[in-house]
Length: 365
Length: 198
Image (tube, rainbow over all chains, first blue to last red; front, side, top):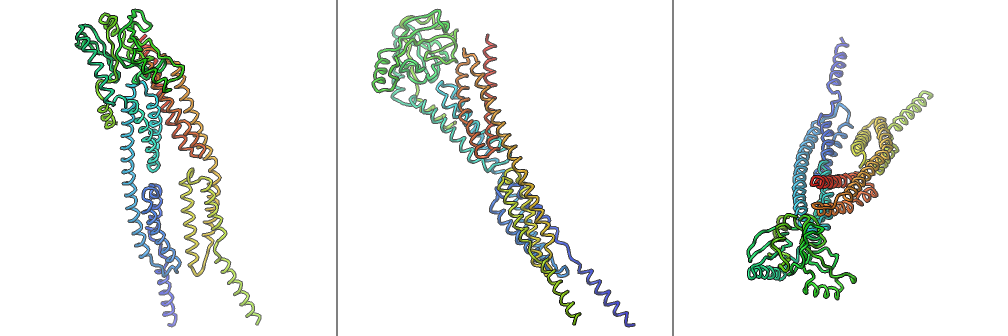
């Protein structure tokens, strides 16, 4: 009879022991581990550094509580509070993941927007640089800007947005340098007094054509046009090519600039190296005066001469001359019978101040 | 009396056994930490970031195990030791792979640099051969300026290589090469344009 209660007691104890077996850690523990890896891979240490650091602290706290709980005898472990801690961590992690995603999208939009703007500026500058022969320094800067923008593109594809700010700054620097060079070349064309003188020359030339009933030629360097007048009336406008530094005023031999001034045809060459040619009387008295002044001031090489043999010739309008004005052969065919010896040929920079042009370029660039 | 002594000796033996098992694996911890640091110093954070992250996670797990056991009445650091030894072994193995990865990145950068150089030289040679006649002279001058700009960017590759920024060097080289090839294509088109006019 005594063995019955003993058996009962032993059985009850075994039952209690079985019921109090070590409970497993909550699944949130493993979930948090995976989540932490996901956050790291997503770039949380970079895109949400502060939040990620706080998250790691919360995770550490939860882990420490778990460790404390695990240190207890299995029967006394209770993971309810631990589970709650981990749920907080998981919620925090989810919020960071969303933030990282948003931050990346924001950076992606920002970078692609800035890159598109810069590329647009590069494209416009490249296009306008083709209208001037003095474009070498501009294009050098633009080529460097393009290399840097290509690098940004590569990093962008790799989603490495954070290293891009410096590169974009570099592109901007190259583009600004190109713009400044471009604008400095054109600055003379924005000088109102200079433009006024060009206008005066143009008006005098057209007036002479009207008065004498003859032909006159007006060359506009900025517009790259040659206008043919008869009796003061405009007959035709042709496209032209200029010297390598055609937008500059010719000062001495070999500067590859195209002279500005009032000239006359002194020779008609029916068989020129460049199809047909009209030789003008460069240098005129004004040119000689400028040359002497520049020489005295040491602005030109000591041995340099003033140069000459400036012509309007055939051979095409998109080539680079040594200072002459190039036109298509068919244009020479049209000019040749219209123009005689002594016909006025006036070469000007522009009829309008480039200030407006520069302003619009600055705005568009 | 003899029995009492026997029990005492056995007691001391059992106690010492527990004590020896309860010792924190300080040496293993230091070794594992040093091994991770060495791998990082070698460049694992650049050339094997994922593997380094895993190592650090394993180290944290091992340290958590050490802390867990440290709080227990009957401390058993066997598992923690095993974990720490594995971390050290893995870190050493990772460190050993870095020089090869670094070398591969360096070689890739050098190859990219050579390719960029070749592309630049080819574009220059093409420009020299291009007929500077009607309709092409201005284009050629513009392209020469473009190539000069690429030449100006070229030293950036070597600068990046010198700073062991091999990925950056490869990117710069690839960009220069692409632009140089574009110039070559333009030159070829210009040559064709002239041929077509003849």
